[in-house]
Length: 414
Image (cartoon, rainbow, N blue to C red; front, top):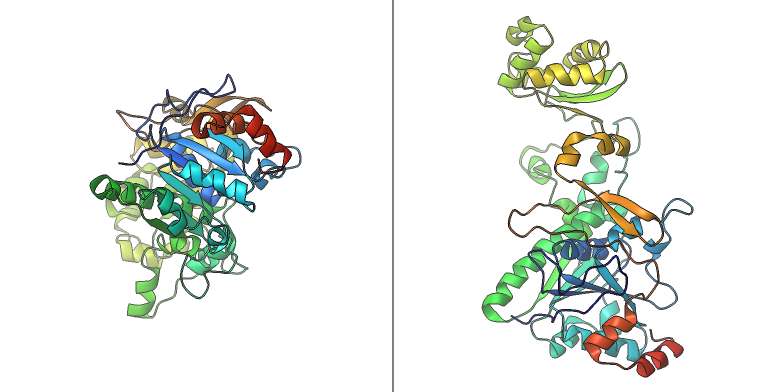
């Protein structure tokens, strides 16, 4: 395997080093050339699992995520830049491109999410990079993929979510489609890109050969649409928006408590029977309107109303307690404050507290999934200073002198 060498001591006292990083991907090196969310999220997953991630940003500008967020609170930066060493290099200039080529020689993966053709224009396409490192795995994330008639179009997550079929299905049927309150297409594309990259790594282990991982946002959405396409092509059925429930899957909905909302999912026959007992309505188990899965689906609206009449006279804690007692799947509809108070989140370390240059401490989601023998970790939050690790990386990996780095800074290359 062609593998990046370990990096040296991180500059900030709150950061661990690539040498001491733990996790299943420790010893691998990732060069991140992307920005915003899709590419950086892919690199974040690698960093969480122990890889040495070097993020390359434009001098004087940086990733827009450094400033995005509610006014004065660009908090997503600390999440998407965690575990990364951040350097600057002007990829539009030959000297900056040369820096990338030299780093590629010591890297295992390159991640980029520019519009297709951009890397080739800079002389940094896959054919260029594999001359520097035949084993390099190039992860390319874009709206529409590297091929096809739409490939050159700009494509953000919202557009990919629409094209992939999810946006049409989200929201209430009597209004325009809604969107998730997160960039679902970006993070899914980054996740699928990571899966593809690890598959490519396995291939390289056997052959020494690198390759391109082509991850399109719209296809990452398409991949999770279950039987959407077969339903249309086989039975000429088109799914429509249904709000908080899935048609014919009942009962499985959000119900009102006296002090909040709760989800109850009891669409399986045996579970529905336990729900009836929990509600003190055992006679519903044999009611022909509700006795079978199909019947419950046909009478979904009135069944949901019946359950809601029962839940709204009780607090969500009371509803949750009786459902748990009867082994009925139930859950409160959480917001961030609920996560902070939940003992299950605490027991599984689902959230982690980190030192932060800007915020003092910052709490964020921990590494997932959890591995029993080689767990990943969040070792530091994203550095606030643009190019915080430029001197460190260029000195250790490229053997540049302080004078050479100074000249590059003065000319706007780094």
